[in-house]
Amino acid sequence: MWAALLPVGRDEATGGYHRFAWTPPELECRAWFLDEARRRDLEVEHDGNGNMFAWWLPEDGTRGGAVLTGSHLDSVPGGGAFDGPLGIVSAFAAVDRLRERGVRPVRPIGIGAFAEEEGARFGVACLGSRLLTGAIDPARARALTDGDGHTFAEVMHNAGLDPEAIGPDDDLLGRIACYIELHVEQGRALDVPVGVASSIVPHGRWRFGFTGEGNHAGTTALADRRDPMLPFARMVIAAREAAERNGAVATVGKVNVVPGGVNAIASSVTAWLDARGPADDAVRRTVKEVDEAARVAARPHRVSVDLAEESYTEIVDFNLALRDRIGAALGGAPVLPTGAGHDAGVLSARLPAAMLFVRNPTGISHAPAEFAEPADCLAGVEALTAVLDDLARG
Ligand code: HGY
Ligand code: MN
Ligand code: MN
Ligand code: MN
Image (cartoon, rainbow, N blue to C red; front, side, top):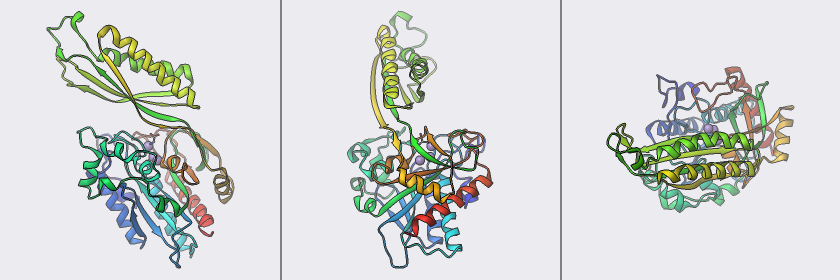
């Protein structure tokens, strides 16, 4: 299974992955998911938001009280091989193990593949699970645009989905008793193969727009310039300084300089701020201080600054009872927080959710060096199998 996915969307020169929602590599991953589901006679369900579900139904056809596992297939630009797919490959492997052991679940076991989890194409992380749970206004989602100006609605329509049908699916959510997402660790806290998540720290994304005046790089006197690159540059430094002051982390990325020529002063710069921290106020203060610094820096250059909050997730404390039950099924496992957002965090607003982490010896994620040893991946499959076996027996 794993070998079939590895080359899909991989940049052979860098080893990074480029699997953006509904682009050819991600569509290829979707086809792989459906093929693996069919091989196992799992019943496939699409929720209209681009999320896919493969169900192993009990012999009596029960649909309620399901135990859902899974993750996502999309990646960040130049991402690693494990972030997302490891959770889905492990889920299929766990179903195989349960069947080899003759387990006949009394509850449905589902494998989910959530759309646009990284938000790499349309900017909002966990877009598929946010739509499913009602955490984002469908009209706002339809209007989201990618770097080429294509709207989410257009892309959904071209993928054969009805953009007017996106939105919460309470019937589907009502059939799910709990969700467990296995994921490669994004950091290096684990010194054993498998851990259990305690929480996801508050995190969000803000889009800064700097608007000045495009002009000739050689004939425009400094005093006549309205160069948006200058307050943008200040914003990047301010993000680091504010994060240090507030005990948070902040990253500036996804920068778009218009028009982007070398001999033209930019007319505008768009830059995204990713800020995360141990508590809401640390994150909010960081963003506020970056915004203030950007505006102070923009004023002398007669550059305007606009700021939009693209997504924000308050702290997610995973369901304690489910977490403890998982810990017991594993015979004990370390519990750790994560600074990464996940569909499990979004779903936890509507149903009990949990996460298993598989050790990552490099600690690196969202980059080609992301890694998990085969033996630890197998330990992750064994752990997920034990958890599903325990939960699906009722
Ligand atoms: O960005 C994140 O935290 C996650 O990997 N989507
Ligand atoms: Mn990720
Ligand atoms: Mn992920
Ligand atoms: Mn995720």
